[in-house]
Structure formats: structure tokens, C-alpha cells
Figure 1 (cartoon, rainbow, N blue to C red):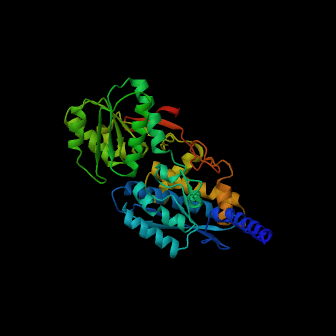
Figure 2: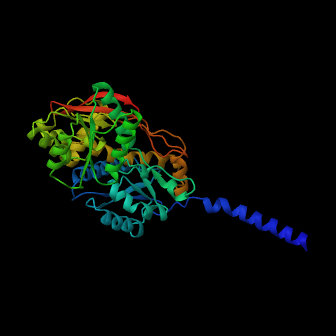
Figure 3: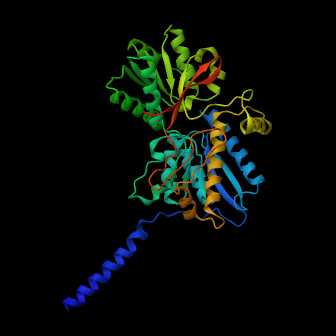
Length: 399
């Protein structure tokens, strides 16, 4: 009898061991793939406080889809992009994601916009087995994953992360300019917290203390209290965990007070609209960045052609945001092509984790992922506004 129970126990153990790998497998959807098309979705701010990001990002994505499809698609399948407006509102982003999953049956979410909005909807995507690819936020939650939670393997990011880029840019600025009293003003959400974390981590590594830490509500337009506090605290360098309008408002307030201080923006500040709208107010502003911003009168080759084609399509000048949206789709297309004609969710995941490199036309650092690393790069530049244009100051920075 004891032998019987022993044999039974061994048999049960074998079954359990056999089932364990299956239980740990990542579930990846095969929805959105037909003989003729691949359906991808995105949610952007097309009407809210950062529509200056959302509109050109979605334009860049549309341009890439048109280009890929005109060249024959992905192994014969055309991409169909479904764009939803989140208004930079987490609740709307959740509803948009549910609609894209349940009604549109998307294969992947590509380039969704914003830290609070992406975070709010992320678990819905992962639970449904939908890949979350290259979101327009570089917050850590978009690429760090727990190997014990198989669904978290569905997250990949090709943007420069806020913590690492803030650290690299801040380190360079302090060492190059000998600042003694750095401080920070950040947006009070997941994005701003990441910039704050980078700021605090780098100061700790350099055995320095922040002179001042202040925040503002997302969508705020009055920064007089924050600027007055930072001035009274004696800051000589202000890191801005801001987006687009806030750097202009903050620097304008500093000028009103006659406060001559150096400003360093996190990567979302590095957009054409800041010098275009801020004009002389933002002259001298520094920013962390991922790649040099191309200008039509100085660009060459494929980049020049791309800028001209974008203007023809949308009757507007291309900008950083348009490039990032374009690259999100082109990166997706690269790995979907690598996954082969018999495209499945699992084959797409394997292609992404294969170590194969994607190089864009803008000379950004190459995109490459692995089974253990779902972040493409941490190499940082610092740029500065000079005579109304972003100019490269230093590249190939790490912390």
C-alpha cells in the first residue's frame, strides 16, 4: 500500500511539475491579426492639456502606417491604426483601452500617451494579453517587470527613461557649471515623481542636498508661488519635471522677479514648441534629450525628405513628438516583420526579446531588447535653446 501511495505521489508530482511551466507562461493575444491586416491601437491627448504632444504623435503614427502599407505592409498584411482621445485623463484612457480591446480587437497598444493615463490602463491591457509597446512616457513602470508575473513581460519601452536621463543631464550640468544649490519643480503625478527620483538619486550619489523641492498640479498655469519659494531658497539650478507650457510659465515668472537662474528640463521639455512659443523667455534653457531635433533648412537625406513629406501630409512642421510617434510604429513594424508570416502574439514577443536591433533614420541610439531588459536605451544628450533653436551641447551621457 505504501508503495502504491508512493507511486501515486510521484505521479502527482510529475503532473504538477509538468503544469508549472504552463502556469508561468505569458498569455499573449492573437486578436487583430487576419490574412490581410494587423490592428493596432493607441490613446492620445487630442483635446486636453498636452494635445501639443498628442496631435503630432498621432500624426507621426499615421504617417508611418501609410509608409509601411505603401511598401506592401508587414509580410503582406496592412496595418490598421485606431486612435482614441484620452484628453490626458486617466479615466478616459481606461475607457479608451477597454474599447480598443473589446470592440476593435487590437493586437497591440502602440505609443499610448502620458504617465498617469498609461498607468491607469496598463493592467487592463496586460490582463487581456495585449502588448503595451513604446508608450509616450518613460516612467519605470512601462519597462520594469517582475519575472514572477508573466503578464508583465508584455511591456516594452524605447524612450529615454526619466530617472536615468535626469540623472545623466543633472550630473553633467553640476560638473560642467559647478552648481551648488540645485532644486526641482515637478508635476505631481507619476511622470513628475520619476523626474524627482532621478534628481534625488543623483544628488545622493554626488553627496549633495537639494536646495528646494516644489511641485505643481497637472494642468496648472500659475507658478508664482513655486518660483518665489525657489528664489528665496537660493537655487542656482532649477530642474523642471514639466511638459510644454510649464517651462515657459516658470521662466517668465522668474524674469518678472529679476531672478537670473539656470533651468534644466526633463526630456518632455525638449520640443520645438517651447522655443517657438516661449521665444526670448526661454533663451538659455537646457534640457535632457534622446536625439537631435532636425530642422528643415539644415536636415539632409532621408530626414530632409521625411520633414518635407510630413509638412505635405499635415500642413505643419514636424517636431520631436511627430518623430517619436513615427518611430513607435516603425519599431513595431520592424519586429512584426521579424516575427514572420505566421504572426502570433507569442512570435511577436519572441521577436521583441530576440536582441535584434532597430535603427531609425534620425540617428537615435539603436533599439534593442532582451528577455531580461525591456528598455531600449539610457544614453542621454543635453541640448540648449540658442537663438530660438535647440542646439546640441553634449551627447553620449550616462550617470
